[in-house]
Length: 246
Image 1 (tube, rainbow, N blue to C red):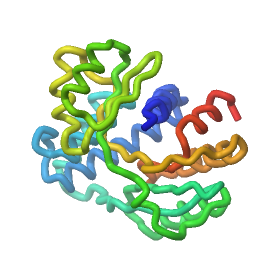
Image 2: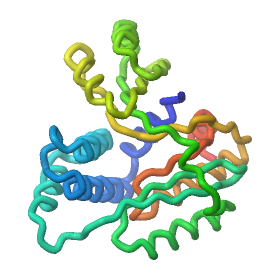
Image 3: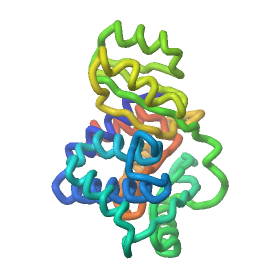
């Protein structure tokens, strides 16, 4: 697995301009409010959906006050918006599989917007792709401490990916926060701790196709209703596009 793609994506979000930051925060607020309503409460300790939504928001530096207000508004009930979780499957440039997750209060609008992006970028929303992705927990520690690697291996985690400035640890979805609790006292809080999806068999598109795929991902992420975009494109190829500025 290539955790550096997830980490580079998060760092890119943190470095976004003010307008983009506002959109990122809005998406997290929507996810938190939906998690409160769907998970049955405002306490992350007893609501796994909310725990993951809050952890993802903290990863993207959403202010604590925003998170608390979102939970309070969701608990307050009233006439607040209710969002449905939906997923869209399809293929993009070079036959790369896409899985798009969204929260929407208008399914017709959202599917039309997503379909438009697929069509504009040479993709199509046909066929099943969800089976090509595995749900995992992912932790990123900004550390290269050998003791961290050893401790993670002793916990029997799913996989570990280390590079020059970070260690990415993959867990089974149900074990994510148990691993956090085991490692945090010694190694500090992880920079990332959240559930995500990874491709079972990553593809390595050529540079031109990788650039098209990266633009399609950006266009999907620009949609207000879209929460997460997953592809089977090899992370290194997309990272090279970002670093090259193409």
